[in-house]
Image 1 (cartoon, rainbow, N blue to C red):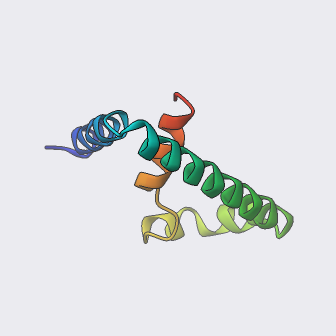
Image 2: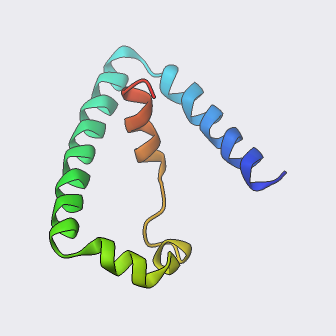
Length: 84
């Protein structure tokens, strides 16, 4: 299985789990996802003010390659909640 197939499989699994949640658990997951998104947006604004674009251009993606900023299952729940 290649990288894209693993990604697709993981997304499909998480989608099935998310869609299978009881209404109460889904409501709770959605509330937590919204709170996490709000925190990430605040962090993003702070990093923009600190010149993150220049840092990222200089780094060339090495931070992301080393696992510092990977997309997580929580991020996927936010996307599922938003219907993306």
